[in-house]
Length: 309
Length: 299
Image (cartoon, rainbow over all chains, first blue to last red; front, side, top):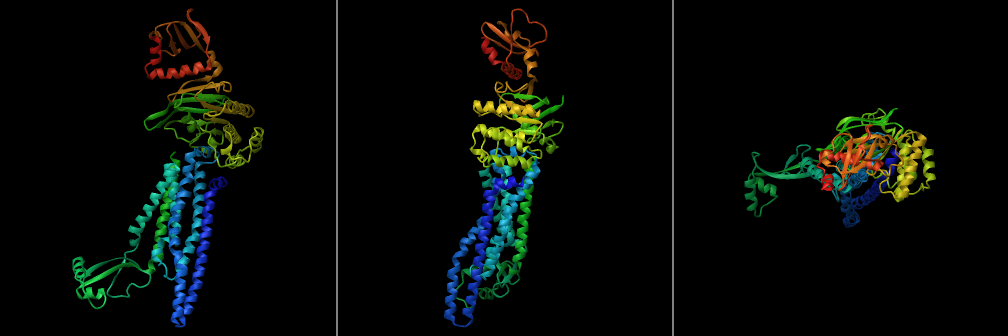
């Protein structure tokens, strides 16, 4: 059964492994180069020769800046591609070609057929995703916030990226077992994946832990790589002061100091809600667990839909 | 004589439509059975239930005493199945298809399968999708026989094959049945293709069994009576008259003999298997519908 599963899916699984190895190697190489260049910049800027420091810094920026946007785009769509091209056809194609009538009437149970298939497909895609997730985390750490911050690359690295790949693949398999045709299953997978990612990213993620608030007129409370969620004006008693704030902003003229100080002198405090840098890894763990649990549920749905036939 | 397949009060409903209803069948072991009926009669549903691909709505089915849903390994290891349209993995080579059979079936008979396909000059390294229809059908059959089943279920196995490929397919089938002593059930909507190989007949229509039995016994117990035209309404609607047709001057009755000689105005003919099957198919409709054919002919 293992041989047959591998033989039937070896094309897409080989692509997954190749992409996993090559992309991880490329990212690791980039990380290594960035780290080396960073030491060069630090060396040049340590000796107070500011023109040399500027030159090496500019050189550093121009050399590496171009990598991050395309790499980010690739990492953003990769999990979805796994769901579309590995997950969705896995069972749907058997239904479409009628070959499950062949597979299910040999001397193995349907249960074993399904377990082998799901384990092989999710196992291989997960193993391909892991090195990418790790390499991407190291890359984002290596560039010290020059090109992208931790929070803005939240979904391109670490456990979260890994869980997206597993979730998308499980979603594809479940859609295939329910819809039973390849192209519609791919459509369901695409819509489901994008919807789940948007819903979690926009609604759930900011609130895994209650956001902290800092007074904008008192800088230094929210330092480091924070994730700014929004701001709201309050009066000195902490009540919402949207109206006063709007009036003040409409009549804003020349004022000394910062806008925070200007508002404070008129009795309005601007509070900024944010998630601190220290919550990055806890949030990664929470979101990864969320998507891995959803993947487990989808495997259950697949098992149910196959059993019920 | 032991029973290969036993269905009792079997029913399968899709939505509000019954594909099989109150279906009772007992297939004796060692026979080659023709399961015949019009399209949509329930033949495929019966086969799919027998191999556990479908669960019956009511009733039960047993394959050598095992339930295909509750004891799948015990039942499936004794059944070789060729599903409708003879599905195979088209991207696999013939050799890989044999390997699949070996890996998935504990009783797989590799030498016999290899010898069989070799004798039929089927190239082992060719992808199944690139074989001719006849060759692919032989691979399907070899895969079903290779698991050393006691019962072969073939759902419309020779549809879409050219006459030569049909003959070769049936020859292989009969040889395998004869040498291994197994039971085979072949479904078809045309009985003439199966007449030469089958010795047992089950006619299905509208999800029910119309008639079943040994083919020689059935042919021996039915006669076609031809005589001067009688009023169709005078034909008694009992079990002895299976079907009646009337032209302008003559009436033809297909009857089940009851030992009495028919009145002398009737000429008695032996029936062909095709006549018999058609009569039982028409008879099944007569029960529920008006009889347009009879009415048209009589006017």
